[in-house]
Length: 285
Image (cartoon, rainbow, N blue to C red; front, side, top):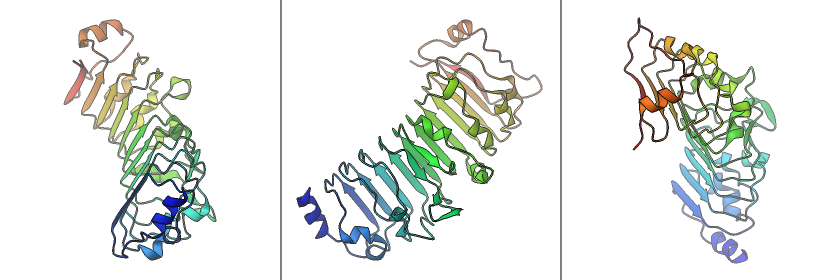
């Protein structure tokens, strides 16, 4: 640990550096230049912190004025995000890609500055991925991004959506994989993603109910359901969505005919007054 800290202390890069990958660092603390990274690396646009298994805190990355791509992967001792992470006003003003992966003990990711509860951060995201973060919620409320990927992180979708959460309308694509939902119902927060174009669900094994309000997502063009083996009903309201082009259901290795025969409760019938690009029950080989 001490050796890693000493080595990294003496590896301060040139101020012109634009990409930094810190992989396998085993020190307990970050050196001075990382704790003042906004000053020492003002041109940094891409930062990956991964396999830093002993660190308990993140450095003040919000101070990086040009950071657009941030990945935090496999920090098992990271339990909280403190105010120092943001570095004050103007934090993450250019961040477009945020990936949180294998943060097993982290329970909360703030979406507002702790010292300024009126101001949201992470307001310019294009891609947001949360994978294998089983305890994580966004607080005080869900955050927006044009594209969302959520895998093995079921509590993310139980984050609050307050009356201020108009940023949910920027979400265009949502992919959910290997998540279990409370009472087996598609999370209500999705109802507020009113500009959603694509919704994909895969291997959500306890999903049993897709509510009628899915038909209120009038911008929806593609609906894909893969390996959600408990699902046996789909609301007819999805067939009346004005822009729907593709509804695809993939279930194991069964043929379409087998799937339909085993799910005769799956009430779905094409609207005769509407044409669809695709309504299929796929077979996987």
